[in-house]
Length: 305
Image (tube, rainbow, N blue to C red):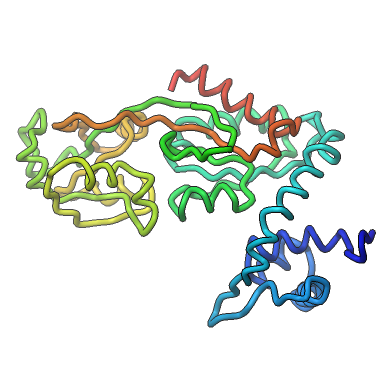
């Protein structure tokens, strides 16, 4: 179908091309060959009279005009999906919807694992893509085509719908055979600072962790020996060492049931850890999206996390 000489099917391809910025990855999502996907990009360039994507080294970069197009194209397609297409698919048991959720391994463990197990029984044809929250700036993650982003509440974005899901605190973990803490029942600040540490913080991910608060607020000179990009990696870089790490209490307590971990209160007051679920306003009235949000809230309430 064409509108003002634009093949509207190309808008779907344009959204994916601007999201992936890769012919190979876009071809996979479009179920096309790489040559056919290159042909689609050529047609888009011809219509918009702009290169849209430019190869620079091994990566493709959006032109300024492509950057202007990305948001309105995504919003138009999101509106079509939520207001027209998905109105027909408001029965979870029949839906074949795929949901993309950006979150942390912590939230997968304490909340989403329960949600997904429940949904697999109710709506077995719904599929999920779970991506790490620690892969970039929160605003870019929200705008990357994710259906939901679950992240620390402090990073909720203006003009995006959101709801708080959990409330937790931080705790310090160590191997139960840590030679420096063998006869220690509680940590004081001096002991804490003398130990080697594992910290969360590749590039932008430090903004989403307790590490930024530690750097900005607490005048403690720690010796960070290992940087990791998720809480699970923290566990296994603390085990069999004399290192310690700070992580969410519920995550630590869950793993301490089957791993040789020793848990300590942190020797200074830290902020609470609250996590919120956020989504683009165009998805507010999408029936299946609303159903998924209600399921997540239902489990968060029942689990009292």
